[in-house]
Image 1 (tube, one colour):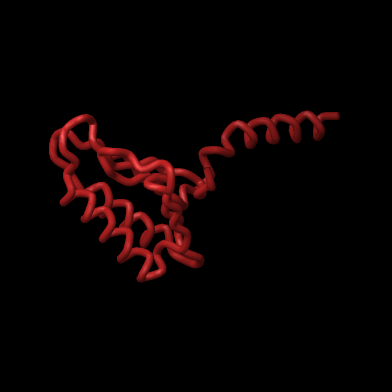
Image 2: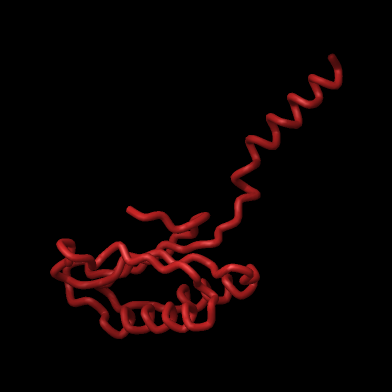
Length: 122
């Protein structure tokens, strides 16, 4: 009975802390206008960083959520997800994320990066 109690306690602790061990191997990227003109230079830079990461196999999966047929925002922008390539180290993927974080668009343009476990089709 004592072993069973210990097993239950350890299981409960592991189930509570499991999200802390989950790796973020993808990043959701959103850039767009908040009413003013979109910072096209920042948008171009985001696309270049992502394109370079795809070309170097840092990113294997890249899903564009917007713009898509029927969902083109008037202001422009991009909503997408980039997932780490097969066999890519966390250091390499984190360097890619740091490149994305170094982009600072002008006022009037929002830019969000959100780490996630994987990219999902919407």
